[in-house]
Image (cartoon, rainbow, N blue to C red; front, top):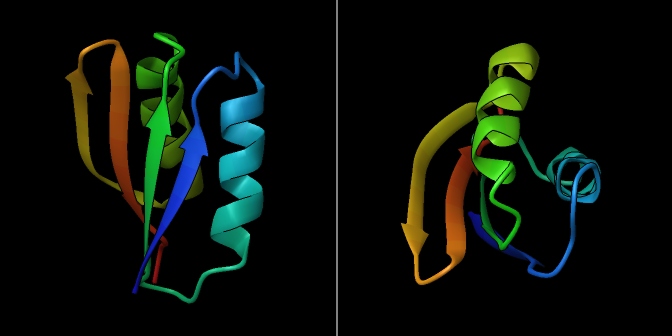
Length: 74
């Protein structure tokens, strides 16, 4: 299952905090699709997934927005 999370306009640390809250609600293996505008989110999501064991499936930038696909750890 995929779920979307719109974090546009939020600055650190809110994108990570809201992502953690959303991913906690998902089942193992589900994917959270995140949209953010904070340029720091790129490094933050990489570090957070490395630390938590969740899987950063993709990280892309498009027109000032950053799109992430994060799979909840099994």
